[in-house]
Image (tube, rainbow, N blue to C red; front, side):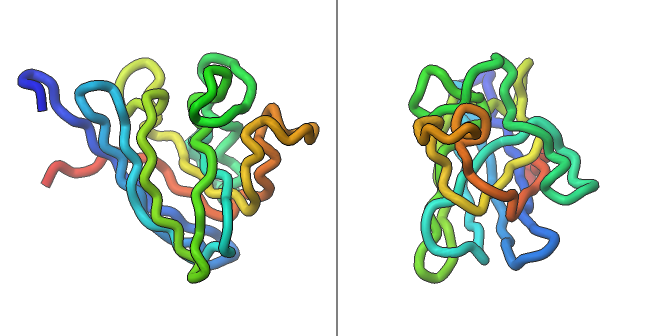
Amino acid sequence: MESGKSTVKAVAVISSGDNNVRGSLHFLQHPNGVTHVKGTISGLKPGLHGFHIHALGDTTNGCNSTGPHFNPLKKDHGAPSDTERHAGDLGNIVAGPDGVALVSISDRQIPLSGQHSILGRAVVVHADPDDLGKGGHELSKTTGNAGGRIGCGIIGLQSSV
């Protein structure tokens, strides 16, 4: 770690209202600006699931009240490697035959500090694969046609102890 710069840590506990999707995710913003997301989510059907940061940290109506994808630069939906993408577009996570997804994602567009911080926003797991904006469906350029919101959690600062 560079002197004078510190890492910022956050956590999100994933839950769902009507299914068994559960987990926890840890966010670590490195001094170089890259944020690493690491954790485990269980209770998923095997296969790909869209995985996004949503604009609001509001779960009063379950995952449905988390708003649209976090998109401060007003871009179309895309893959994490695309120039044209929402900041919150993190692609897909993969659940194994046991329904467990091991998450390990590094990204520069999801900072835990500064003007476009994701603190207080929500991370959402979707029922279906994200087509990364390339599926040709009417929802491809807004949501990746990733289906319902089956698990979510609010991203909050983590204790340093």
